[in-house]
Image (cartoon, rainbow, N blue to C red):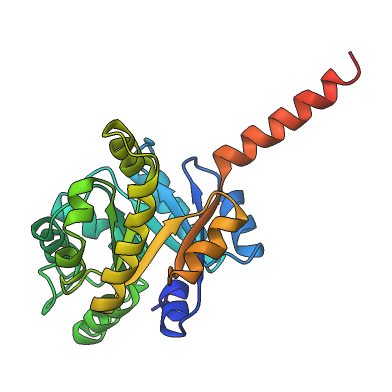
Length: 255
């Protein structure tokens, strides 16, 4: 059974590097691995990949030895742990605003004694071998991870209670949705920046990891200094847009 690169980095107190993809593009996984990333976050909340397409991408992650973090379009129990059976190393669940919702997620994706995930053991996560169930359950609870996205003011207000939930492995601050909601309330960026500090404090208090995106290099350094140990930096949407803008400019120069 495969060990998680991200979890290993966390155990060593090191930063785990993650890229993001939303298209069926195995080459992006290969290039992420070759560029030193530990995980690829596959976003299916805002995209529409089929289960078969996701399964193929999870297999490519295994081939190129990077963790596969899935942001799913559902929080229904059985489909969530099916992602893990199909090869996801981590699940990134959007819009978690309360400890009650966090406990429901733990119940869905962690095996006893942490949760109530259904046992199979003969899926891709178990190398299709139906390992000894006790060995398999211990591995799954230790080497796969649940990350909850905090992206509403309610979630920020409840950070301490959410971080205290046993079985939640990491908190993730989503500045897109959270920033939108704060701006609509008149925030100039002060509340959003303060939320990072609150997340760092809650994670440290309860022995959890926390994660955030970084748009520019300076963001990486800032969040790392705050204790963030899973940083998302780099996605195929921005890469394609940047490349086409540059190539379009090359044509403009000769006309």
